[in-house]
Length: 405
Image (tube, helix red, strand yellow):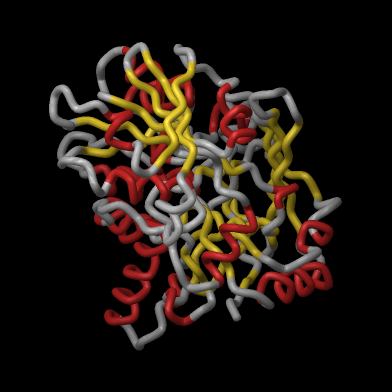
């Protein structure tokens, strides 16, 4: 089973009167994950504070220096000037997020950040739950090489019952709010008895990767590279920073990732083309966020076309050998269409907007994957189609860093 350890975190020294950041707020210093930041949003974050985490996690080239050289220089300088400080001893870090869903219902996620021993999927300790899309891993690999640090945590899920109970009443060391209104809280646990209990609980079951498949694969590549350079032990790079949440529905909000379709032949009637796979039920357009409840009630996907829309109820006979996932059902149906391009889009309103602006020929709204399905698929050694799940909200980058040295 995976080894899960406390580590000596590196954090913004906003509580130290002698720190250059003594008057700064974590609201201005943390950032969203690098892979959800648009160029416009990056510029906003960079302008918000000279020490915002985006400067090291999504750096910009400076003169003759590469982005990775910039990140390494900043990360080192911030520590030397005491803007970032190492905690006095290893600890686990609790991370809590509170928000409201689209209907205004309160949602909460609490997990623990620690250092997880890296292992390959076929070794059974860490299990991916979905395939990844082709994506260059060189960026994050260059970042690891330059900074020798984990700047953000990979999100993992643990089936260990009772993990959440071990994370209560931690010493709070930071609070901030995200731009989406999510309230974030970082806590610290260094009591030896609780540390041992958390390590045993997480280490007693395989971890399912929720978010960060590419970063996990990159961490494996860097570990192997480091082993080859030395004596076969990569030191701190044998582990990676992992945010572990108990695999229960009360702690997780899983949103769907919808599809946009382009490149189909002009004149193709998509409703007719999908009819062999779905019972196509036209509905009144335009579609808005209320369609999600109707999709759940009727067991349907939703097709969005310019000025038209329809519910797509899977035909049992056609879907007999297809996995019980909307992403798998749609993949099966689209495989019979003429060549086309498929892209991914969060948010019902964004899908509708892009279709109405003719940026896509059609959109297909999916229902969210259920938490038990994630566990069943990962534990069975299978994977969902790419971009089947979107865990929300996202932990901030900059809450805590982990250096390999």
